[in-house]
Image 1 (cartoon, rainbow, N blue to C red):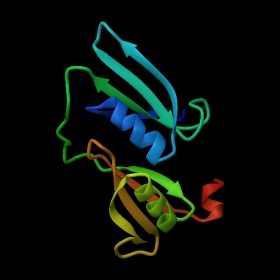
Image 2: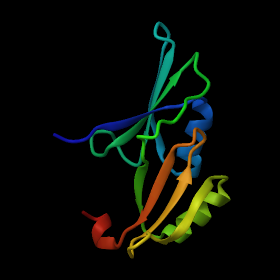
Image 3: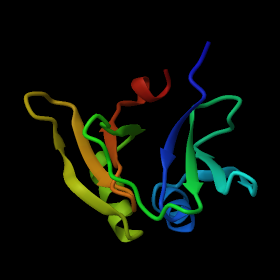
Image 4: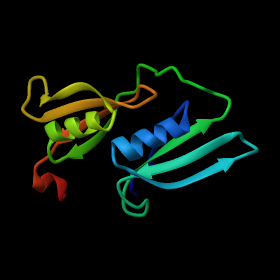
Length: 133
């Protein structure tokens, strides 16, 4: 078994695709409209679905926004340099909501960014060994 994808409901698909591809550097892997169901699915990620876990963005055509529940936490992305990643994300128009720095009570360097729908994405700085595992 392996994890395939995580799904997020988004209010404006084009805005979300722009964020995940242009700001976070993911690739749009596939996108399909389901006319009868009045929704679109778009899959984005850092690699092919056959090799990596990806993100499914679901846009229900008749829903413009969602209320984020208090059970949702965040998506985590490993980065080589969280400080540099934050600067690059801000330069591309992204919203850094917690600057890079050590996590509270620890030494791991983390940061948080927010997507157009308010979902949080944690950036976790990893050494080369952690990134290769």
